[in-house]
Each structure stands twice: as structure tokens, then as C-alpha cells.
Length: 510
Image (cartoon, rainbow, N blue to C red; front, side, top):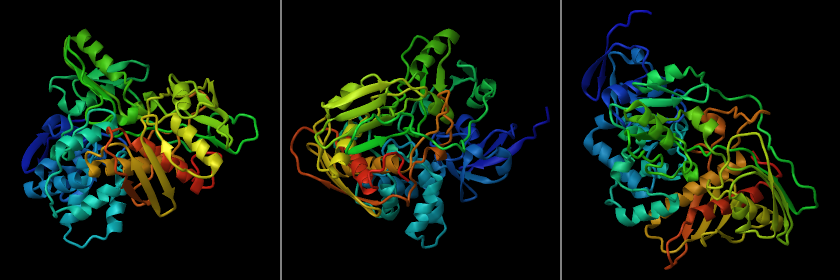
């Protein structure tokens, strides 16, 4: 083994020495310096932007940057930003709803801080292009761009109690709204784990490898980093025979939440929740990591943090069940769907006259708990048969309608007392982005053995900033009980987007 020479790195004004020159800057900042605002959303892919820091004032993703490349240079993290500047960004993001779970936000703020520091007038198109280095699944980008335009123009802090309640209703799990959330302090398990935790990661044989830190655990797992395939995705289910007014085949898609599954547990204790400050659109409700952390902590008599890498979350995490369906204008039809617990009831909750056939598929696990799974597809098919969206009614009782073209998405939503219109608007914009992206560009290639082949964030097909139509949200007055509205928006925008694209029989439509 070659000798490791001691390196010197300046982080937020303090000088640190390090002997492991192969360590990434991200791992150094998190494990050695203890800076948790720098997030790991895809390491070591370098594609999500959550780990962005400033190196001599320039934005750089730290997960693919070896510390040897930044020796003698000045690193600035969120903690090192001028207090007034940091507060201005936190207020701007908070006031327009540009941060929901808050996991990706610190990296984006660091990118914006570098642009701002250039001292030049920055065109809004350049701001949008800068966001191509990032992924945000919650907000749909529009409010993030609005935060750029808002910074330094404070109008006070949003009222957090009702804002957090609305966020929790829309996210279907406890969520908080506030300046600390914008700055990355959302209580994520990988950030709050005790310093003496063993780290557990999935290995190549279906078990878990442990280490004193993440780098050691990953090295022991001996896994080869997955990549993106060149093979095109193909919808896995054939259409039911019949003379239908509308037919649709959907593909495997990745929920794409940014905080990968993680949970820690003390021996004999209860594991932390992988939901933290966001419900991951229902995708983490059956996550394996809490029980893994509990079992390993009890076995080794030490606290254990179990954490998935990005490719682990793709391979092991649940997917939206693919469907193939045909319906007629009278509301009758057939939907074939990947066998999934609860999916038949979800479809029949909005379309009782549609026959449901469950199909056994080789492929990743599926879940009916993912955002509007099953019932959204049924509503979309019915809208396609009629050639218009009309008003979508969710199983919760909320209603939404949408009009779509290539430049603008108009949404109307009614979901009880708004509580906080800014937060509701933010979640509706995020739902519109997810729907547009789902219909037009998202897919995963799954091979004949059922193994996912698209394992990098950029391979999911999620629409980037600057590629989305502008979204306008009208919140209809309603004094009733506050209920989730963004899922109805998701279904309405997906239906309107499909009709706008010509009700093509296969998604993504392109």
C-alpha cells in the first residue's frame, strides 16, 4: 500500500489535516468534520447536487471530489456562509415554498450563493441552467427559481404552525416548515445518528456489510457501482384485447426521492424513522432499514445506522405498479396491473366498473402506497376516453382540474381550508412537475430477469429545471376540513398532459 501523505484543507475558515488522500470531500466533511448540511443523495454518482460546496468560491459536487484535489484550497459549506446571506436565502426559500423536505436545498443554496457572489447580473435562464446540476423531487423547480428572484426582499417569516400542518397533509407524514428546514436541519436519520454508530450498507450477496464509517462499510460490501443502460425501457404488460376508446401502457418508474432510506437504532431501542421530514410520496412506508438497524444493533451491542446508496434504493425500493388498460366512454374497461397489495381497491375507489387483472411480473417490488397509485391511472384512462379532463375527484374527496400546453399548466384545486396558501401552492406545483415528468419522460429499464438496469439519477428521466411549463395554481375557496389536494392535482395534470400529447398508447410519450 502506498504511503499516504498528510494533506491540509481549510473548511469554513478552519484548517484540518487528513492522511487519507483517497477519501472524498463529502465523506471528509460529514464523517471527519461533522458538517451534515452537505447531503449524500447519490454518492458516488455526482448527479444530484445535494453535496454541493464552494471550492475557492466555485460550486462543486463534493461526492466525486477526492480530498487530494482540494488540498490547500478553501472549502465553504452552508455553515461558512455569511450569517446575513444565509438568513436571506433561508427566508427567500421559506417565503415562496421552495423547500419542502429540505434535503436538496442546502446544495442548491450553495450553487446560488456562488452565482450571486460573481457580482454580475445573472439572467434567469442561467439560473435555470445552473439547476441542471441538481435534482429536487418535491418542488417542481418553479418555486426555487422564484426564491432566486426573492432573495434579499424579505417580507417576514411564514406562520409555521398552519404551514407545517398543510405540509403534513400534502406529504402524508409529519413535515415541518421553517428556516432550519431550508438550511438542511430536517432531522434526517443519517444526520442525527450517534457519532459512535456502526454503518451498515447492503452487500453484493443480499446481506449487510458494516464499518466504522460509510467509506469502510462500502469498501467491505465490495459492490460495483451500477450505471445507466443503453437498452430502451419497454412497458412490461400487454394491453387487454377489446375495442377501446382509450388505451394506455405505463412503464416502471422510480419515485426518485432524494434522501435515500436510512435509520439508526441503539441496542434494545426503537429505530429512527426513515421518513424524517418527508414521506417520499409513500415510497418509504415499508422500508427495510429500521428493522435492519434494530437487528444489527442488538447483535453487535452498538448503535447502528443502516443506509442505502442511490443504486440500493433503486434496486430495493418499491415502484409504482405498471399498468396496461383499455376503457370506453361509459366508464367500463379492463386494467391489467402488476400484482400489488391494495391496488385493486385503489382502482375501484374511483372506477368501480373497470375490471382489474393482476399480472405476475419479474421486476422490482411495487406498492399501492406510492402517490395516487392505481386510482390516478384509472382516472387518467377515463379522461382519455372522454377526450377531456373535467374535474378529478380523489379518494380523499379533494377536486382538481388542469389545462396543459407546452408553455403553461393551469391548475384549479379545492381541498378544504387551505391553512397556508403558499405551502399548498408549492405542493401543487411539485405535483404538476411529477405528473408532467411521469407522462413525458420517466422510465426504468428492467431486464428479463427482473433486474433494474437504470441505476443513476440521470437515467430516471426526471424533467430538469427550465424544461417545465410554467405552473399557475388557483386555490378554490373552501371552509371544509383540510384534506390532501396535491394528489388530485397530480392525477389531473397527468391526464391533461396525456391528452395534450395526443393520448399516445405508451408512456413516456416524449
